[in-house]
Image 1 (cartoon, rainbow, N blue to C red):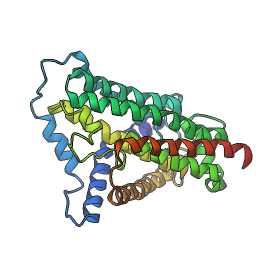
Image 2 (tube, rainbow, N blue to C red):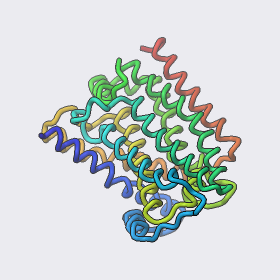
Image 3 (tube, rainbow, N blue to C red):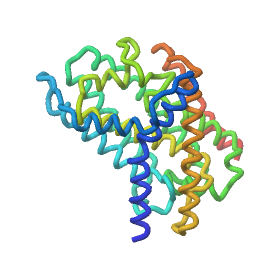
Length: 313
C-alpha cells in the first residue's frame, strides 16, 4: 500500500505541478526582460478559464479532431506514471522502460499532427509538416542518447538507470554522460516547442509550429492540450534532472528518503527552469532551415556519447 501511495503522490506532483513550472519559467523570463510579468499561478487561472469556455468546432473536422485532446492528455497522464519523480521504488516498475516512454510521447505528437491536418486550415497543415520533420530528427537522437546511458546501466529501465547513477557518483564525470545530457537537453527543447526551435508565446504565421497545430482548438479542448504540453515539459526536465543528476531521489520507500526527494526535486527543477529561461531570453528563434542543423548537432553528441562507452569506460 505504501508503494501505491507513493506512486500516486509522485504522479500528482507531475500532473498538478506542471502548470506551476510553466509559470515559473514565464516569470523568470519576464524578470530577465525587465518586465513584471504575470504571477507563477497564472497558468492555473488560464486552464480554469478555458475549461468553462464554449468549444467552437469547425464543420470540416472529423472525429480525429475531437478525439485528439483526450489522446494527448491521456498519453501525458500515462507518461507521468512512468517517469520516476520522487523515488525509483514506485508500484509501476513494469512500465519504467525508456523506449516505451518515448513512444508514448510520440503517440501524442502523431495525433496532434493529424488534428492539424484534419481542420483543413493552411496553418494547421504547415504546423503538422514542420512538427513531423522535427520529430523525425529528434526521435533517433533521443533513442541514441538514452542508449548511451543504458549501456552503462545495463538496462533501459528508468529506475535501474537512476539507481546505477546513484551508486556510482563518478559516472557523472564521464564525458559520455555529459554528452548525452547536452544532446537530450537540445532534443527536449525541440520536443516541448521552446526557443530557439519554436516560440510558445507567438502566433506569427511564418514561425508557428506547435501553435499552428492547435490554432483551431478552443475551450476545454485547448485546456487539455495546454495542460498536456506543461506535463510534457515537466517530465522532460524531470528526466534530465533525475537520470543525469540523481542526487536526492529516493531509491527506497523509507520516509526520510522520500522527504529528501521532495526537497531536492524543486531545487533541481528550479535550476533547470531558470537555465531554460536564461537560454530563451538570450537566444532568438532559429530560422526553420537552421533547425535541422541544430538537431543534427545533438544527434552527433548522442552518437559520440555511445562511442565513448567503448573507449572511456
